[in-house]
Length: 357
Image 1 (cartoon, rainbow, N blue to C red):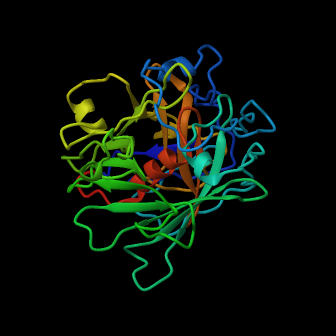
Image 2 (cartoon, rainbow, N blue to C red):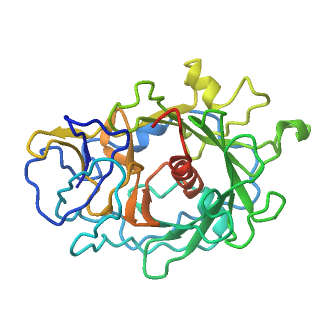
């Protein structure tokens, strides 16, 4: 279990989440990640038309050794610290629940394919700050969090860009925009409060006759601005394309700046798009802190820790992210997200947001 703590006497602008191996029975909100009452697939179907074009022949979903999610470990009690922590202490027995055995035959297809239904894809994100400009432009790597530690994606913020712009690649050594390993990008607005995730398609200015080569918008992230300087935990809204009856992502290919996920969401045109939010922590009177259960997957303090859910079924965790070491994090995602969507949402949380903190 993890907590957001609010010090009532002295207000802090940043909240941290720490882990402890002590058992906590005071939080009645502790529930399994999966909800047995509802079929989560129905939450994401919008009835959109299936994609017309396909680059390659569709393969079977990734194989998993276990079709059910791992049983959550004993809930962990967490305590917050005021302000910025010097160094987080590791909890005793910080073993994380193992990931199902996932086979990745074609990396490009796998990272864009929705997670299989009923299987949590458990990943590990590492941050590399080595280099002359390591403070501003670290590189982030995504691996499967299992014995093989299969590489999935790498991301890095572009230099000399007016807004935050992250390139996402399927090659850890090739993070160039023009390279054949470029798989997507994350772009922010000027304030760093709204982000859009694109695949590797073409800019609308370079569209072909039938627009089939135009880039798709895979997701968007909106962080609520903090005008008072202190409002408790971060508040996130995630917008993703809906799924059709074949459980395929509905293509969203904006032709201009007046279309797209963010514009449709702002105009409340919700056809073929789904709105998600970060799960709100529950206030715990005994510990005087906000409590959020990460089921043993998060063990260290960080303001960036979050879980994304659908309002209609907050027990179904679409994705979760949290710190396990100074520069290591776990990132788990479920249907209907793919690795590129989840990784890009994670990158948006790393980006500095002066208007939110």
